[in-house]
Amino acid sequence: MSQLHPYRKFQIPPNVPFELKPAPGKGWGLFATRNIKRMDTILDEIPLFMIPKRSQDITEMDVANVVHSLSASDQFVFECLRDNGSEPFKTMLLALKQNFFAVPNSPPTGVYILSSRFNHSCVPNCFIIPRETNMVTYASQDIAQGDELKFCYNSELRYQVAEERLRTLLFKHVDCKACEPGSYRDISDFRRTLIRALEYLSLGIDKNAKQGTPFAIKHIDPELRKKAESGCMTLTSRFIYDVFIVALMEAEGLQDPIKAGDLLAQLEAYGRAFQTSRNAYIAKLAMSQPNGCDKFLIALRFWGRSDLGDEQAIAGSQRSAMAMRAILQALHH
Ligand SMILES: [Zn+2]
Image 1 (tube, rainbow, N blue to C red):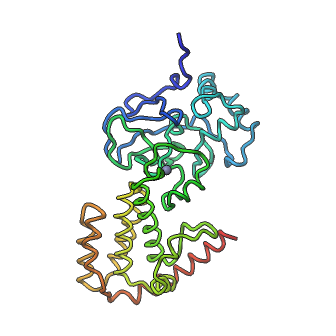
Image 2 (cartoon, protein in one colour; image 1 turned 45 degrees about the vertical axis):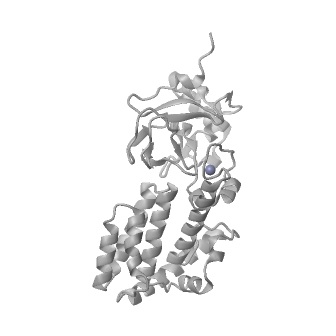
Image 3 (cartoon, rainbow, N blue to C red; image 1 turned 45 degrees about the horizontal axis):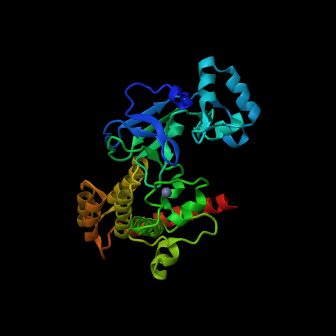
């Protein structure tokens, strides 16, 4: 009789919409056992244990001490962990490094057995966020029974094109349509370049630039770029850029509700800043549309229009652009 794989011994909570099984080319993965609706909770997991240190400061001894203090059944679970689903880990620290999430507020590092089984995708269908010390996974789009559940391991990747992502991601991942050469990747790269350029036009800074990484900005018309950098964009222009970002994020499958919520809140704020009543009406109409593409089509009515609130908004954005630049400079030095 063949030995049962250690992962078969993990307790899967009842009623979760997934199963844990081998994923070809990736070790193990989680797969939907029924259709899942966007925003449904997929998993709400308590940590196996937590360590009150940041992951980079944790030593083998720290992990050993905590593991030895666990109940026999929890120790057994930790010992079941396998490197890429196959080999036993050579050290406890390595097992922790591949199964932890950083949690805001103390204690900052927790080991999560099932949340760590999701594979990465640059076009995710799930997103994961901490709630107190739990890790909670939600569906970021409708998911069909049988589909693999995947989230994006690093939110920075959302703004990178395939070539940049390959440099950022330190592991190989397979079965990712945005990374495999082909027409989907070409379109995806184009959309992400556009998202980054639009964000630059809206904010006048490249929030996601790594030091010395030239990106979409070099493609922007120099005059428009100067206008963005000096915080002189009109409210109608910013509204168009941001609503276009929403449409592109949706098309890319990157509209996790936190990011989408931030963007929509920003759009609502621009909407409130309009002082020309026709513009306020267009903004309201755009925001009432069900998706980004329809919002964008309505927002195009702003093309070439100014607003009575522009002067005030420009003064405000010049102040915040200065503050933002100071923060970014401090971060990079
Ligand atoms: Zn990928």
